[in-house]
Every structure is written in structure tokens, then in C-alpha cells.
Length: 228
Image 1 (cartoon, rainbow, N blue to C red):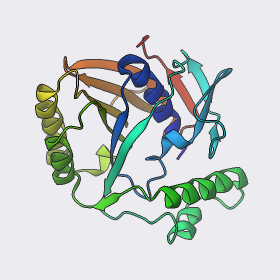
Image 2: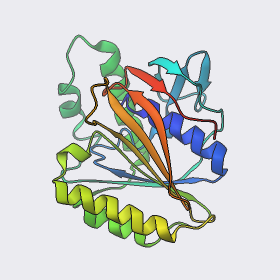
Image 3: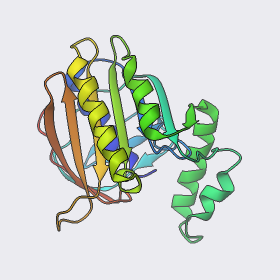
Image 4: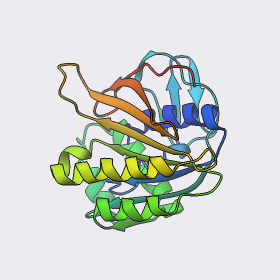
């Protein structure tokens, strides 16, 4: 859930660039705790981004640029997972994944579970490729469709990874200024640099933007995004 720090930063950056509400599609959503990133706040340096009050406030070790303060508006959200968890009935299971002495992290996770249960965002039990194909087939009007995943691709077979990339390329070729598409990726790469690589692709235009790197668990962020 601390990975939401980069989702908050990217959400503000994209809102500053496009000025459109967001439609969210998350691959590998699990219990949906990162799918509700707009309900969290982020402290980046001396700047606070997000709602006030927020369900939780994330305070990673922030390096690099500060994202613009442009509050995102989420028009719709949905996720997919092979075995989605319920933030209410599976809350004890989710908490069991954490060390018992990490009291602050346990508290944040409880709050996030309660908010995810309250919002009841749809998380479909399905194959990621089939689900994404359906999501991309009908682009939302007057909304930026943001497809994102955080440390998920490594668990997909290589053919599925290629299909995801192909689906995004095809949908991107159809994107218009009124139906733009964005793909945000936080994944391991083959460099010797620490943490995960952050990449953003935007259509129309097929613009590729490196955003920097971050710790796999969101403990630090090195944000290198250009001005939007």
C-alpha cells in the first residue's frame, strides 16, 4: 500500500498535464488497497499532496523533484486479480503478512482495508490479459484512462507480458485528445540500480517518460519526472 506514493505523485502529474478526470484500471489489484490511492495523502519533501483529511498519509524518503499540486479526480476505478482478496473478510490474512512489531504499518493497513471495504471498488477475478482487452475496447469519454501495475509483470508469463504490451500499443494508436491513455509501470528491471523503475507512456503520441525509481515497498522515491 505504500507503493501508492508513486501513484499519488503520478496522479497529480497527469492531472496537471491533462486537466481530465481519471479512469483507473489496475492489474494485480489484490485487495484494492492501491486502487484507492486518491484517498491517501503524500508528503513529498515539504509538500503535501492529496485530500485533507486523508485516510492515511505516506511519508517516504523523497528525493528529486516535487510533483505539481493538481488534485486528481477519479471518475471510475476497477482492478483485476487471479485471486482477489476482500478487504473486509480477508483483513486478518492481509495483516498476517506484516511483522507483528510494525505497529504503524499494521495501523495504516487496517485503515486502508476499512476504506477499501467502504468504497467497494470492483476487483474482478479474471485473467489480466482478457480483462485488459475488455477495458481498453471502450475508452471512457472525456477522461484519462490510466492503466497501472506495481510489481506485477514479473509474475505473468512472458507471452502474457507481451500481450499486455500489444494491447496497450493497439489501444494507444486509437487514443484521441478526448480519450487519452496512460500506462504507469513500477517494475523491476535488469539494471544494477536499487529499487523498481518507474515508467510512464502516454497516448496519443506514444510519449515515453522515465519517472525515476522507488523502493519496492515505497520506503523511498527518487522522482525524476519532467514538468508536465
